[in-house]
Each structure stands twice: as C-alpha cells, then as structure tokens.
Amino acid sequence: MSAYKDKKTGKWRAHVRYTDWQGEARRKLKRGFKTKREALAWEREFLASASGDLTMTLGEFVRAYEEDRGPRLKLNTWITKDYIIKDKILPYFANKPMNEIGPRDIVKWQNAVMREGGERSGRPYSQTHLKTIQNQLTAIFSHAVRYYGLKVNPAAKAGSMGKKRANEMRFWTLEQYSRFAEEAMEEPRAYYAFEVLYWCGPRVGELLALQPSDIDLQSAELSITKSLQRLKGEDVITDPKTAKGVRAVSMPARLVEEMEQYMASCWGCRPGSTAA
Image (cartoon, rainbow, N blue to C red; front, side, top):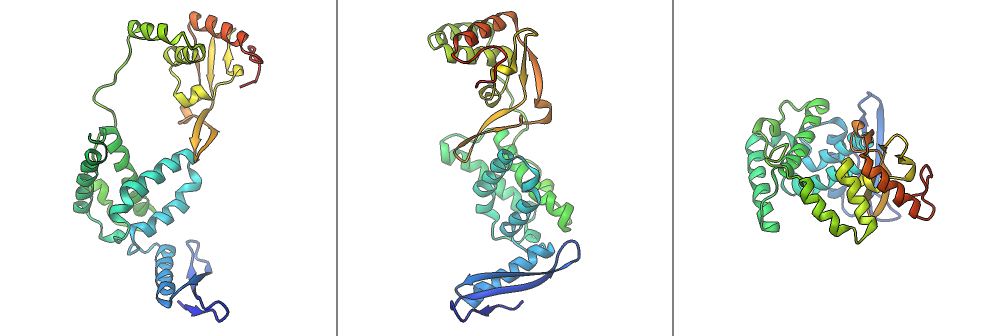
C-alpha cells in the first residue's frame, strides 16, 4: 500500500498493487480522500475484497457479490435482491466481518426482522416474504463459501425463517368472479383485462405486455413471451419470470369471441396486427 498526497489538489490518493483471481498483477488508483487515514482504510478494504479475504465486512463483500452476480441476473431480479439487501441485511451486518458472523448472529437477525414487520406496518411480514428475505442472506454466504473460501454458511446452519408457500391460497369461484365481472363491464378495458387474467392465468406484467399479435383467434391460443416491469420509474419489457414462463395458453370459446369483438372495436387493433 502506498497512500500519498496530491500536491496540486491537496487530496490523498490510494494506490495498491494486487494479484487478481487469474493470478495477474494489477494496480488500482483512487483519488480524492480528505485524509491519509481514509486512503489507507480504502486500500485495506480493497485488498481484502480483491483477495477474497473474509475478514472484509459483509458490506464490503456485498460489493464483490454484486460484481460477480449482477451481470448474470435479469435487471428486475437484481433490483429486488438489491432492495432486500440494503433494507433488511446491511442495517444489521454492514460493518461486521464475514468470518465473524455466526449462526447465533443470524438467529438474532431473524428475530429482529420478524419483529420489524409488526413495527412498520402494524402486522407481521408474511411467511413467504420472510422466506424471500432469508434467501438473500443465504445466497450471499453461499457465494462466499463457493468462491471465497468461507468454510461454513452460517445462514444455512442457523435454519430458515418463513415458508416457501403460504398456508392458504385463495381463489374466486366462478360464481364469485361472475358477480365481479358484471360490475367490471361498465369499464370495457378493465373487464377484458380481468377476463384474460381469470380464464388464462397470466401474471399482471405478462398481461400488460400483450400485443394483438400474441392473440391467435384461429387456434384460440394466447402466447406469453414477455412481461412489462416498472424498473426505476420506467416501463421495461423483459422476458417472463422464468424460462418456463414462455408458453401458449388455450382460450375458452367465450374469451375468443370477446377478444375478437374487443380488438375489432379498437382503432388500429386488428387480429394479427402488432399495435400495442
């Protein structure tokens, strides 16, 4: 390490030499530190991260985790993961060294997260949401075990919180939906949207991404090939949530008839066109 002061700006620079994961010699320079202490602290953190030294804090490791995993994930997947990490994990573990976090720390964190749900909204987090939060911490430590030499995944050893599936799934019966649909008829666009949702079962994002060309009235099939996501304030078309999400769904005769009528009534929306 060789922090030094820039004579022109009066700021400190950090300059480190290190060996990357491929065994090649590298150099890293970072400018703009107010004090020598800050520059040296950055050098220590960078060297720990570059070498995979698990004395680095979890906050430091998350940056390495993002560099490793971020490019391999869909943008919307990473945004969700990043939100949970920053909101539910870093407030507890950001400054704690990775190799000092044990199962007892994870259990205390789990208890704090479960209490937090009631404190924030007046009711506890759902079991599926708790499971999602747990999965993110487990994934971070799994990455450290697999690629950085951490011996034990403390999140896995501590046991999970939450459940993968909720205890009860609620569905509308046909009678219940029919009563709802009668009221929705007053707004045709909403009515036809709910008709597609009820009879074909796409996710809401998949519904919003549909185009007339995805509706084959001849074969009575709905093609699900994309999804509309709201990412960082912008509407973005992405692939469906999973690889199996690309699919063709059969439409009942009543829906085929309704779609034909609706598409014919929309300006620029004819069966087989590509207008949105």
